[in-house]
Length: 76
Image 1 (cartoon, rainbow, N blue to C red):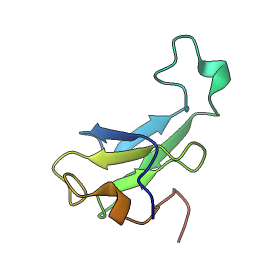
Image 2: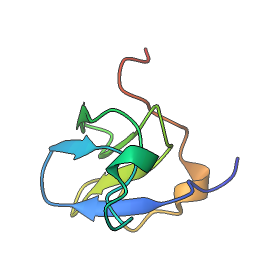
Image 3: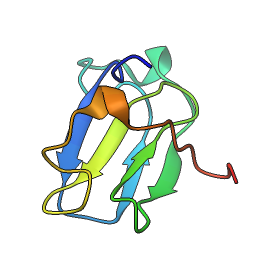
């Protein structure tokens, strides 16, 4: 396994991702905005850009992210 391309720590269990949050005026360079729900694993990966959202204080916070499997919204 390899680490996620980008990890964003958050205090919210529901997060939005458009793939261009850090690109000034870059909404056209991202992907459609999707809402992701962090579950009991403590993290979720965006199915478009592979950005990982980790719940601060959750079970995945402070863990080596390369050891965690991908969890994309809608995968089961």
